[in-house]
Length: 379
Image 1: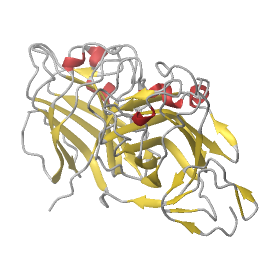
Image 2: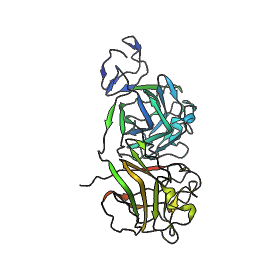
Image 3: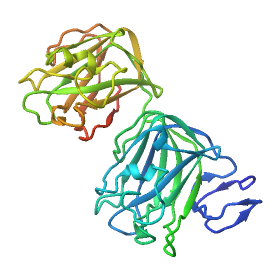
Image 4: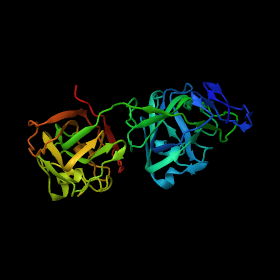
């Protein structure tokens, strides 16, 4: 699109050739500089859907990512996907599988929200490893050319190098970039065909916080479980700096807990980033003894001081089950001292409170399902 310049809220569908470049069927692009398109590193793609074309559902048939005209194939790389709401049989994972048909029946080949949830929906696609993209192409929702009013309309799209697993509408993602802000057309209702809308990228950095923690110890005071009457636990606590995982194994830290069920559910397993966050919980997670579902303290003491600006937490699960053992209300402190007092709520020397809130219950499927903890800088 050389020499086109900046295009703002311009309808490009069926325009044909501009400056010698065929842009037919591009769709509607708002706020995009079409002279160049940035190349973005992506671990997670975040789609914020503000509204649709009037139906009580909102959905997306497909979103394909490209880098240098090479299709990124999430189903080959490995990926998970989630949405704020889903209709059973039309989960978010289907919208990113490039092997699925973009025509015919929509069930099992597209994402669709639950009934009545036709605004303020977030959809995320989290790749197993980082990739790159310089454009993306969507096919808006349709079911064999029908119910096209379910299609997404006003949309913002972001990338993040963090592995964001949850689709929380309105949550600002650290280390993310807005790559699209505009409007998509309805899918054609004339025929059951592919109707692609292609998007070049903008680049607007999102900086929700400028707060880096320096800590020797991180202390989690866990008030209660997600409903289990006997146990409370966590699968993983991960620390990130500038979007990169702070990798630690059990040789890099010491962990403590008020109680631990047994050697296979020791506190150290909640912090070792080399361990899996799916599958069985034995030797991969921590949970308390029974009946200690409340007032538990979990501590990690690093061998050397660490810096981080983001925490991701995978709540307790065992092959996607027993999720009520997960932690609920949690207060997190960071200290520059080595802390080993496992008394719930005890004073913590040279510390700052960096989080005070509630975690969500694990999704109940054997996937990672990490939760972003937004750190609160001291006043």
